[in-house]
Length: 276
Length: 276
Image (cartoon, rainbow over the protein chains, first blue to last red):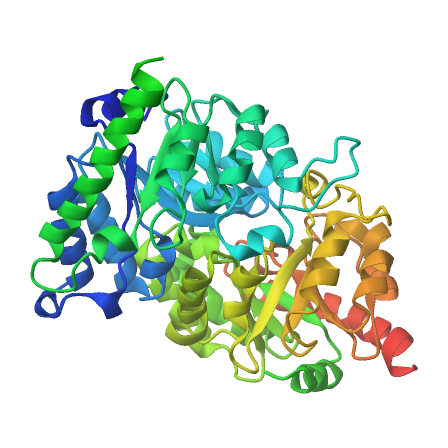
């Protein structure tokens, strides 16, 4: 998917919501357990209830991988029913030596048909570039994550004279590897104070922002500090939406939760993007 | 598996060879293609031919993931026929926020029965610790990898006064997260000049060393500089062994290639470990 198409969809839906399909078999509503593939059925109903309110879906691959081969079947089926105009993110955090990253690219871009994949930067350029060979397929590189452990290494200061953090060098260096039309960055919403440092280095890139909701980040802050002229944000919410109810009304409640976020986003889009 | 059992096996087999089961469906000998599961059949014959010469098997998960659900079936079947005394490594390079890493741990330690998994350090302590909850299950953390991209971030110098590299801080910090009985490190054989810096920080840990063979690292150098009193090395070879021949004799030739490495290792074990 191109950057233009993504922005078009954001304007049309007045939303930059990404819904995390982190579907845990242990948290499914009981009435779904009779289905042949309860995980898929859960996802199907969530997608049906929310597709007009979000611009991206992001299954975290761990939830599917933990179930063995049948989890991959549920994932493939889920991907097939997501409407084509919606951006899809394989939240896989992969990355390996060149010939191996090529295989991961094959897994997520050919065996499955994802628009993008999250990638870990530690192994450097040749571990990331194999994901960048097809136009319209994106890398979403981990820059500054939302978890407490982000302080362990991402926030180490480098001896480059500028006292930069490691995550800043990751942004600066990797921005050379691809255009703004193929690269995005993961920047945690719990890191609001650093969003301006991120934008100083990558003003035009899209940022994928997890950590709003269950992890405590502020949508207002991230929108105010992080938006650019093409919105430039995809803000993810997983648990707060898909587990809004654990009963028969889970899809309806998920829609209500998504609608609430979308309404708030509409306001920020008007305030910070449309009036630019 | 305990550290003691692993060392016992090394002494018994006079080998610290890890064989990488990086089985590419496109590189299988033609006569195997009639089998119901050619990837598994290839692995089965490789394991049968080499199990007395190596102490570990390391499937790189990308090769299986690229095939979709059936790849995971081949992987599960392969794991089941590896003899119990041999150490198994899921070369997966995973790592995510805590509740998600837990699911990856479930995938590789419960759904499958691996002894260890390779993990990427970028997201910090809480992304690694969920893999450390079961005694006898190991994390093998990326420290200094064998690819050219290792220079991009792993070798950035930190402003900590000691002019340390990032990979040194990764070693120093993560060594606090677990005992030497649950943590190993990936250190590329192509990085011989840095092995002494690694050993200065983690003298007693096992190192998993890829990059010998196809990637050009020297077994002699890594053994001389990297061994400790419990050997402390698992040296991986993938392509040079499993693709030693592409014909009907592939398993026999794989054995010959493995035997040659084992003989060389026997010499270094006598020279650097047994005489200590």
